[in-house]
Amino acid sequence: MRFSEIPGLEDKKNQLLTAVANNQVAHAQLFSGKSGGPALAMAVAYATYLNCQNRQGNDSCGECAACSKNSKLVHPDLHFVFPVSGTKDVKSEEAISEKFLPTRRNFLLQNPHGDLEAWSEAYGGENKQVNISKRESRGIIKGLSLKAFEGEYKIMIVWLPEYMHPTAANGILKILEEPPESTVFILVTYDYERLLSTITSRTQMVTIPSFDDESISQILSETHQVSVEKAATLAALADGDLNTAVKLANQSEDDNHDFFTRWMRSCFKRELPILVEMADHYHKTNKLAQRSLIKYALTILRESLICQNAPDINRVNGAVIEFSKKFSSTLNEEKLINISALLDEAYFHLERNGSPKMIFLDLSLQIAANIR
Image 1 (spheres, rainbow, N blue to C red):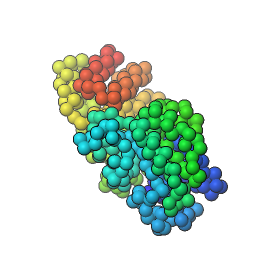
Image 2: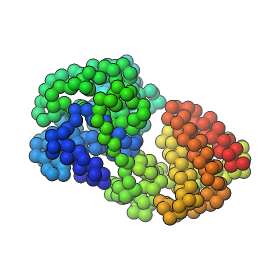
Image 3: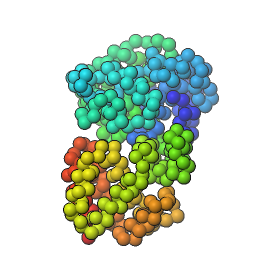
Image 4: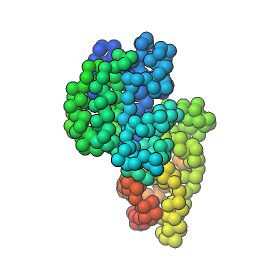
């Protein structure tokens, strides 16, 4: 992964490049971004640049031996730690990053912006609680105790440190604060607020913005063969989350739109038997579809609020914008905000493995109550 492979974010790339040029590489950095954004890809591109043997002014060369190895994520001085869980082949107490490293490399090469849910599916840990265990902290200390093999820096990328067990987090504090010479920690978080203050106080914050609509549209068009017009609509619906955009492209946003309009119509009319039936259907869909629908609903609510207050900056078109206009004319601003809060809460419970049927039905009844 190189900086040139990540669309946009030129200011942030220049910030990182300038730090290297001025010999101001912090030994512990916290890349804070959002799920579906470029935070992890930026961390890998930065690591590639740090050990490039022929650095260019704006990127790694992509041709030297170090770049070649980093392009395959097999450079001996690039280490990865990430959340895992037990699987049918690995006991929970033995689940550490090292056992899943080949799978992780393949996953990253195919999906550098993949989220935790997609990663859990890739290694076979679906529906299991992931973490970075205490044993992992011992591996971090051991792995960084030696000097760099080939590169100028020994680099440790810790993906989602918010899932680090408190014992593991406390176990790496000393090496995080006083690492061996030429060692760089890059922690990539999607939920900064969940991190221990002892971790954040020892790292230099680097805020990585989400993708803008133009970047997501470009990726969808070039990588996923989505038409330019459809890509622009999906980019607006995804709101900076590339994973959501890809899911919408693969599962068809029309499915979400049709289900959402029928759902809201039933909430308006308080058609309880239909809402129960829809809850059953929702329960049978996979997790990706369940969360995708909630995100789609939040997008519609946001666009409806924009229709009421600043219609000139709506980001969608076609059937989505037409429905948003009708929806916004039916509900006032207070009700739209209240329903958005209910959707946020439902998404929170879905992420924590609550019953989709109960969550959806309870959400439907509360939306119906707010409408009335």
